[in-house]
Amino acid sequence: MAARELRRQGEDSLVVLEARDRVGGRTLNMPIGDGHIVEVGGEWIGPGQDAVAALIQELGIEAYDHYYRGDTTYDIEGKVSRGLLPDVSFSEALDFAKVAWQLDRLSAKLPLGEPWRAKNAAALDQQTFGAWLSQHAATSFTPAVFRLINRAVWSGYPERTSLLWILHYLRSAGGLLPVILNDGGAQDQRIEGGSQVISQRMAANLGDRVLLGRPVLRIEDPSSGPTRVVTAQETFTADRVIVAMAPADTMRIDFAPGLPEQRLALASGWARLPRLPLVKAAVLYDAPFWRVDGLNGAMQSDRSPIQLVFDNSPEDASMGVLSCFLSIVECPHLADRAAREEGLKHELARYFGAKALDAKGYVEKDWATDPWSTGCITPLTPGLLTAGGEHLRKPSGRIHWAGTESAKVWCGYMDGAISAGARAAAEVIASLR
Ligand SMILES: Cc1cc2nc3c(=O)[nH]c(=O)nc-3n(C[C@H](O)[C@H](O)[C@H](O)COP(=O)(O)OP(=O)(O)OC[C@H]3O[C@@H](n4cnc5c(N)ncnc54)[C@H](O)[C@@H]3O)c2cc1C
Image 1 (cartoon, rainbow, N blue to C red):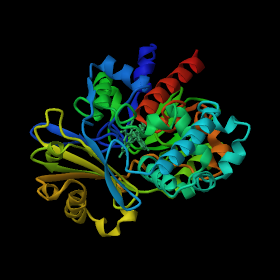
Image 2: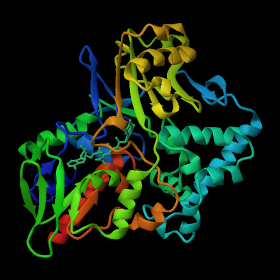
Image 3: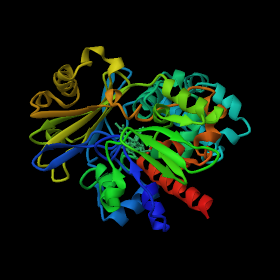
Image 4: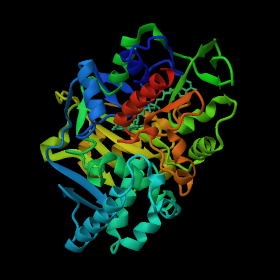
């Protein structure tokens, strides 16, 4: 996106160096037969995600509503229920609503994209979300649901996640509801042709300015002369460098001179974090059979192994697809692919009946074993955001930072990645003029 924006603003002397043999990063389309694909990385967009909405419109890509007609299945605190909401008592629902409201109220007070500037930032960053929940929740249901959200949306556990980081994330998305709502929230719409098509379309427009299979090994920013960007094949010189990846992923690059201490602390802290390694798997069927039973194929659970399920069938419903999110550390018996392919069918049968055993195919992406993405979304542990947050966006000499983690709005999402790229490009243009 940064390269697209630079060109739009008249700066065309640029090159994009991509480590992988493909573009798209944490978005990836996988073929599932008959010309269909399923996304095994970033997928949905929702209301308020204006950057991605504008970009797909420019690129001539359509979005369509995800299928949510019918009941959602919930498996919370060992109880399986179906409906619009989980089957809970009035007092449990009230407690959840109260805690959610308190959380939203706290998050709305943060300066957008700059949580470290909040008056009580240090206190909020010293606390874990789990500790805050145990002080504010009056039922076991409320922490169970937030644990579900923390695991599934933020790949971590409340007892390890900074309260300030959670509030920052919610603030950037406009509150808790936009994050957790499927229909009408961040999981509202799918991209025609799969989300990776956004990067593929931009790369096609950039043509031979995009070089694949070029892991950047070293970036030099000397006190005189141009910057130097070193790959195994060649060395490029440039007036400015934009690094567009998660802070943790920048740790694979050797910076000379070294990065400012706070930036390094942030990136290395992020890289060392305990995270829930994520697998996104799709189990394929002849038809979306659950729809006939009045189910929308969505399932949310606070118990392992499957955290979330979505009906990811093609728009024409010519086959059925159930996409599952799981973390192998929570289910060691599903540690290898063959075990997952078999085991997930049985897990799905618990929620959608015996027909779930009759799968005709399986695809997955294990992000933990990907050499170029340290994680999906990684929640920060206490202390890191106040110690180094300012350096998420602050240029280090002539090196500018993009990537979704640096976004003020919808950080962690594709939308954030797009606005961050545009912001870094604008910074570069301004610094060159
Ligand atoms: C399973 C999963 C589900 C998700 N679901 C959603 C969703 O539904 N909606 C949503 O909006 N977001 C979702 N996300 C998040 C979304 O995919 C990311 O926010 C977005 O793709 C991040 O884009 P980025 O450009 O910031 O980083 P990346 O996509 O990580 O791109 C960084 C790029 O840098 C490259 N790179 C890394 N190191 C080097 C190096 N040394 N040299 C050269 N190149 C390098 C990488 O190969 C990569 O292409 C999901 C992510 C995952 C993994």
